[in-house]
Image 1 (cartoon, rainbow, N blue to C red):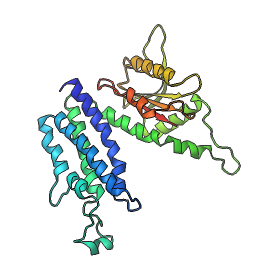
Image 2: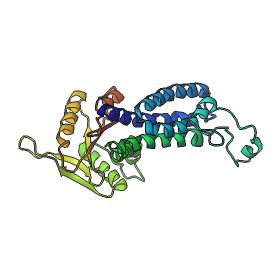
Image 3: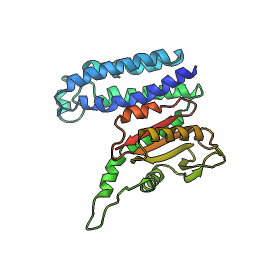
Image 4: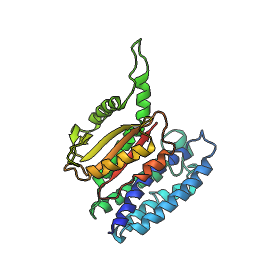
Length: 285
């Protein structure tokens, strides 16, 4: 498999995550735009599915297609996209009792579960061709955790019974919180790990996840660290840590409380990695 194909597999795995939340909302009866959401999901998933079929080696295509096609009694993604709003009329009484789902094609079993299987097939394909499924899983987990960090920071800022909350004033405050969060999810977190020598110096990365072999850096924007300067720092970090003896991937958490970065999603995409050294940049505001 070519390097370009591996890059496409990496991109497909990441894009699959974007289907989860819209799919859940389609059977949320509090919404009045569910038909639109279903059509939009069908279009976006259809594009993704077609790309996946053209990227996967022939030996993986059948298993991948089965998670879409399904059939009685195991209805899969195709059925959900075609009739995700259809009520289960045949077993309406059981559905009213809560014994089974009221939906003919419940989102969990008809979309989310087979989508998870398709993602695993993509990961298995990478594993069999020299890709990095374990690293990608670690980066996915880090992204999922730190996307929710603003909520945790808001809780920490609150005064409790006259005791002042915790405020992130600078990058050192951020590092302490990130260190604590990492320790909740990883057994071996090495703070201030030295990186490879460059121009006679030994720069230090903030954290190294020893078992996962992921370098973790924290950044906090300020007037002197705007998008351009931040981009330069990240590019230098990535170049530097490619040579680290114990790091095979790079994760950067950027805290941008004053919203210096206007196009956060575009900025993050600019640092999408090749498969030789996976990179993930997450910006929180």
